[in-house]
Image 1 (cartoon, helix red, strand yellow):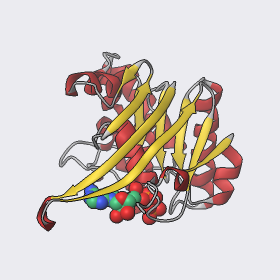
Image 2 (cartoon, helix red, strand yellow):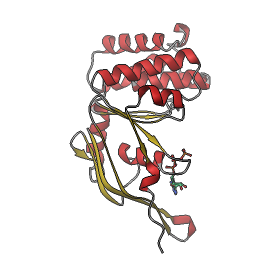
Image 3 (cartoon, rainbow, N blue to C red):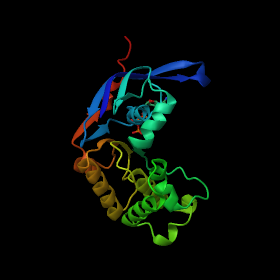
Image 4 (cartoon, rainbow, N blue to C red):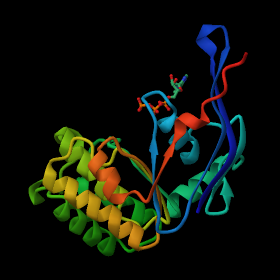
Length: 227
Ligand SMILES: Nc1ncnc2c1ncn2[C@@H]1O[C@H](COP(=O)(O)OP(=O)(O)OP(=O)(O)O)[C@@H](O)[C@H]1O
């Protein structure tokens, strides 16, 4: 479902005389249905950069990023939006809070965008919020004032509300307590069992060992230093 080949990335530092910094060269990896692959490598090795390229936020310098048949490295913005709507999910540890929108609607929104009936979408959102131990009294409030951990769990509920066939997970268990960490690991296992292809960054080694089938070290994708 994810097939990356010969991918390279440079950053151009426009505020520093246009210096061009190569950060990735010849990157290749694949993730099949029902499989979870973990990205590893030291801080600064390029894990987040690779995830952002697959999500379509960072442009590739060259190479291919096939996600469910779409080459994200060359896709038009509207193709990337369509891919994100139905096929490609992304769960980070931070919620982008939209002011004044109640939590239950924040969580249900991806389903509404897909055309699921409002009451069904709300039911699914409420079930996930309950599973993630968000107190019911908070469901009708905007998550703007929630604690960091509560916002993270709202974001996870939103990220798992649709069975996206391809999922990117960026530290989904970071700063969760043991009980909620367990819920998230179970959600990941359920997504895998449902056939999702998952690529994740997990600094939590216990979580990584439990859900990842394979690890890919991005250090191997660093450009060779010019002689
Ligand atoms: N927007 C950017 N502009 C310039 N350089 C960048 C940018 N984003 C990342 N880099 C550089 O690319 C390299 C890889 O960074 P990246 O954040 O992908 O690493 P990482 O493996 O995710 O690290 P960490 O585990 O610390 O999050 C670093 O050298 C970083 O300085």
